[in-house]
Amino acid sequence: MRTTAAEATGPHFANRGAIKLPSGHMTKRSLTLLGVLFLTLTACAGSGESETTAPTGPAVYVRNLVYEPADITVEVDQSLTWVWDDDGTVHDVVGDGFRSELQTTGTFVHTFDAAGVYPYVCSIHPTMVGTVTVEAGG
Image 1 (cartoon, rainbow, N blue to C red):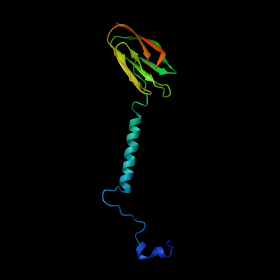
Image 2 (cartoon, rainbow, N blue to C red):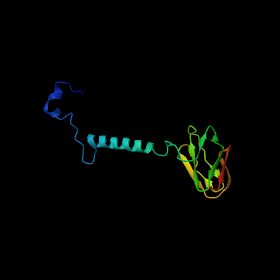
Image 3 (cartoon, rainbow, N blue to C red):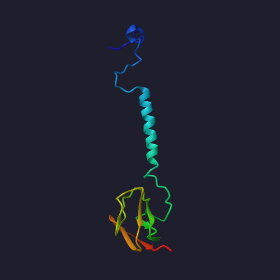
Image 4 (cartoon, one colour):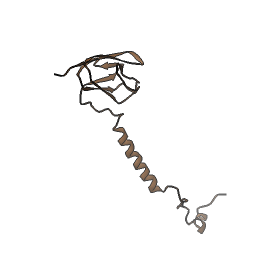
């Protein structure tokens, strides 16, 4: 049964536009505040691991299925940062005494505490290889 416009003006339809929610349901204001909170948290999360910031010390970039540079020299007790920048391709860094997680974005930092030569590889792309030469500080 359809209601005509003339019938919709009677006393039965006086509060038709106002929906009263049972207690425990969210109001429009609550939903708006929840939406603002979600957007704020999403924006804050975006400034973390997924957005790569420039490292402050020596760095190797993981991109185009290679480590750039493939060979790098650092001093003892100096940290080296690997920066993922390969369009979502999964890589890791595996060497003697250090191992990153498999990841598509972000960074991995390792501090070398002894002089030596440390070769490393991506465990799922064995042609991706690099070498860290660690020298005693002067």
